[in-house]
Image 1 (tube, one colour):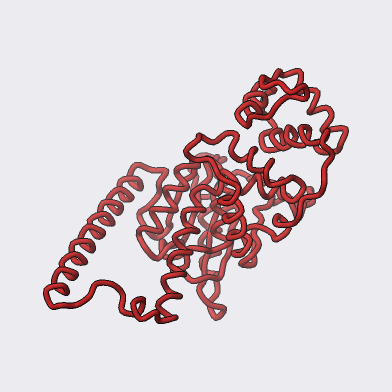
Image 2 (image 1 turned 180 degrees about the horizontal axis):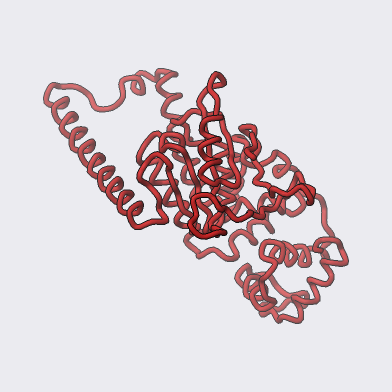
Length: 337
């Protein structure tokens, strides 16, 4: 059964009539897909994405084709194909897991430019997920699909090289004729031209944020506003190499941008409540454990040392026994179940 999601809300949910669906934290449990599989069950969850541009259009033909292809879940969105900031698509990409396959009817339902398409596929490959277009010869799970993708990537790079050469030739020709380089609208401080440049910069910034969203969005969504920004920052930076770590100002700017575009709720920007000093370390340890329930006590020790957190006795070196004690205390405080 397909589900229609508003542009500002997406939840990938379990298709089961027995288990109630938690409206806040909906867990996925895919049923095996037996469509188009020679051997049942098929182990690869297929996640469909259908997009229409205007309210006058209907996504029903896309939904039917995706359902026939075996998609266990289908997310629908109304948005322009030229826009790269689509909330439903962003949430689908964020919640896909290793082994999942994102399926569309045609490539233009996912992206209108080759660069955007390649960017999305690179993000999927980084998570171990795949991409398939039903009406185009692209399936990144197959050698033929990967080869087609490599050809498209080479064509895109060749196109960019041609554009650069034409731009350089056009500028050189303009200089010989006494023309001034640059955008005339910007030189004249035209509001429309300035607005266009500002939007382009914002789009570029959001694209860069999307590449790192998996590093900080889950922590911010889970910990704010219950935890102060300083502690959230420590937890975000804990597993990251030094060159990828965030400053508090950069993190706040990123969070504000995601709240503005509807990727995060406004509540994450609320003022953090006061917490007793003795409760701070249990809260941090509970946050680390909550992000990775399978994490070991020694791994939590390593994380706390990387965050430069001191033990309750003020030492810099952590022991698993200290972490175990803090976890038990977090359970008593209701910070961890």
